[in-house]
Length: 372
Image: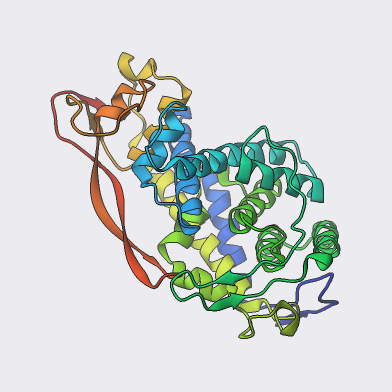
């Protein structure tokens, strides 16, 4: 084991264990295999669109958003689509989608990780594309159990946030220059950001996007084919447990200097698992090939094609007459509007210790089928 210890205000404390080293090798192997897998432009677009929709849905779901995967795909595909009584949920999903696109753009341009970038990213997450960069919180916040009201975590005081954020950005830059593996930097920035909790709201979503930014910028974007957010949401107990690296709820009484090895082992093993799943999907796409699109599908615009990523495991989609769906869904994608119904899955919501049924995507059998 290689100890990685230094000042807790500047550098996270962790140990490079055999488990982490093994996970890093698995990540590199999956990345190389996907890079050398011949995929058609249509297959790449499908994998990328599906991953983005899942990222937007599941990251907001973790924070309490109650849109289904189907609804998230619909409001992303059609900017005019609204859901009565769920306006905030709709806005959160769209904001995350737009923030994810911006993160990918910044990564392509090799933008440095700065406090200004973080503030711009948080503004996108919380208030949309026209918002100004968000200043850090000016008061104390606290994380409580939504069901019992019990205190779960007390972040640092507002007066300490600017210095801690400056130290985090400085550490990330030094870690990059020193050659620390990119997935480790991404995982540690994710953890440190949510631990500092520099905003009143939107910290979790911003942290997950920062990790995505670092991975993409550092050459671990995997073509945009993956969604870590989905894995977290489907194992919320594991996600929250990994983030709780010290038993004390107060930042100043253990959290600031905690050994982050358990979190890193979780993050790296999760990333390796997600990358391997993408490798298998990419290989399957390459082996099966991509049929020529019918004229009806070629006419779909970009946003309409986004929803095709939701059908990655479906050989055909069918277009029946629309039944009961939602008013004011718009007309961007007739195929999408007519082809969805709900089936039930369950996802454990650890924060409330209850089981939430989450509708997922399925298809109605009907008259017209299109190969995809």
